[in-house]
Image (cartoon, rainbow, N blue to C red; front, side):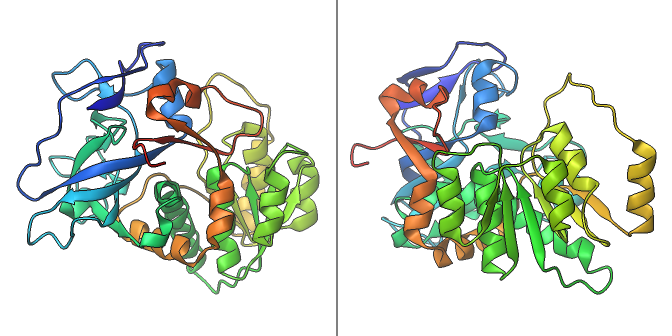
Amino acid sequence: MLALTVQPNTADSLDVGVVDDPAPKPGELLIDGLAVGVCGTDKEIVEGSYGWPPPGHDRLVLGHESLGRVAAAPPDSGFNEGDLVVGVVRRPDPVPCAACAHGEFDMCRNGRYTERGIKERDGYGSQRWTVESDFAVALPPHLVDVGMLLEPTTVVAKAWEQVYRVGERAYFDPQRVLVTGAGPIGLLAGLLAVQQGLDTHILDRVTDGPKPGIVEALGATYHHDDIDDVAPRLEPDVVIEATGAGPVVFGAIAATATYGIVCLTGVSPGGRRLRIDAGAINRDLVLENDAVVGSVNANLRHYQRAVEALGDADKDWLASLITRRVPLQRAAEAFTSQRDDVKVVITLDDAH
């Protein structure tokens, strides 16, 4: 079968080649791959700046934003042939740490977790793959064209959970949210905000292309001015930060309403220095009872919450996020950014 592979930490090593067909182990599902989404982490791996191959191997099968259909399932797995499924990305560390031992592998303390398509486990970017039934998540059939959006939705489902866990240290009734970044993570964070009935605002630097219309169709308000202009005007109760851009991060932290919460989901690139008034930021955080929390990855309950969110969303709106579909044989095209890209998807079967 064909698979999308890369040699981690080696630039220009992306390849679509023949690999052995997977052989399910006891308790595993055999899956016909339908599609994988492409995100910034995948691009970093392809650029040679990130990623770890499975032990004893030189190459890593890419793809962690999965979508597939069950080809075969053990009788007691809870799955049937034909079911639409997504594979969970992270696995608990083998020690395990206290968090992993309690099912909170997204909060692994010692960093020995593994991740499909990223860290020491092959991903889902192949025509067929296997997954443990305990780490497979069923999707309703109507999400067949957009189900690869589930994994990024789990990231924001966890982010919103973190916001409420922090907020509920006292009376918490947020009204207005600002999402910074109108990429897939930001737009999906906005989706969950709108589903909660919040006054939702999404900030991005582009002024044309599909993003403003996608935000408007969601029922949110689109902004493209500087964060230092937008955030003080809105005084949001919650900020979901999805850019990782230093000026945006600190601009958001500085301008929330009293008792504001900023949840950071974007990973900042290294090497750039910013001059900030650390004293002023500290003073505001303390005197206003503000909070800043980082959030990454997701565990099983976040996958279930994400299934609910996508299941309740307008299917046409979800489809509008997918601006390009590239067949596996031409997968390299998915890693060359185009001007109007939002979410690029690599299709793994001939039917899509």
